[in-house]
Length: 217
Ligand SMILES: C[S@@+](CC[C@H](N)C(=O)[O-])C[C@H]1O[C@@H](n2cnc3c(N)ncnc32)[C@H](O)[C@@H]1O
Image (tube, rainbow, N blue to C red; front, top):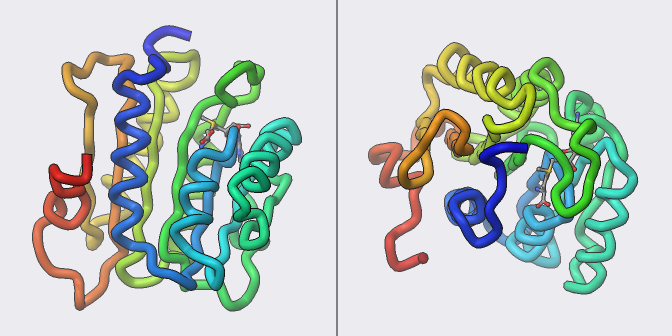
């Protein structure tokens, strides 16, 4: 896979930036979704952020990913607040309990394939990704944060990124949105898209709202 991950490099910084932006929408006791659990990095981040009274629902189509995520959650003593779902995020809505409907504080997508030894043949796909994005947006509460990291270096990645870009451009007119490229972007470097669900209380520019203060790094 070309131009995808460099541990400690731009991809890691983008993932960190996504977490910093999402953290602004999270409060103890809230609901959050990790649409692509993978090795559990975002799931663990969300689990810590929602606190003991909050809940996280994490999806993945691969049992290996969910096992990996479960082990990480156990190690970090936050498994109690996470519900792991072995299903496509295209079924996101049907797996939400009633109290979470329309009340998600954040939904995170980290597209592509399972890192650290996962099969590159099991990747997120444009059609199911867009279905999941539709449902995520319908279930976010006012002021809720959507984050999507997409990779353009692997086969099918550019097409999926284009589908995500089209979704943001065509469906999120009334949302605050922000597109973030890593330093020195190329056609194969990943991108981060952020969006905040409309809320009358939200004021300011998308940049101010979505990006962490420099001191956060
Ligand atoms: C880049 S990884 C996610 C990494 C993860 N956020 C982490 O911190 O390790 C993408 C994951 O999406 C999963 N995936 C692929 N298609 C999916 C789908 N339709 N629904 C949910 N997960 C899917 C893959 O199995 C893979 O584990």
